[in-house]
Length: 205
Image (cartoon, rainbow, N blue to C red; front, side, top):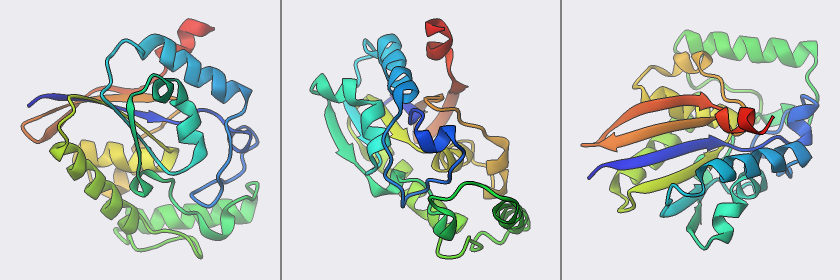
């Protein structure tokens, strides 16, 4: 059975706008821009005929796809789609020390040490495990058109796994707020048709 799966990053929050680390421990709301981004996505894609909307457990994903949920489309929440935990960095605005900690972490991942993490945070290995489980779950679902809403770093992991790349290649993927990655799932393999597409935002400008 052929399935079409849309992977969407949530809309903008004030934390995004002000460069404050969110992660899984900050359950922020969309700001006005984020609400408008969600509406723009709905306006362009509301006729796709989604049979299920799958989000993280965090409000910013719910709010981004609320218009689809309000249509009565089946909605489920998955902690596997939550943002990566950034531990002691969460809720803080970036500074040189935090930036260096992040660069050190990326260097560890590039060296293949996927168990490395920010203090009290989550490792890339842990995130890969939960995301892989979720992608396998998608393969077993019966719906043919599914909308998934997640988070920036989690989306980089999703994209890496969709393209069957090593985790160190997460740095190659960028996901804007409401950036869309569209895939076709056929015979157990994901084929990526769109990457980080924001044409719905450009149409509204």
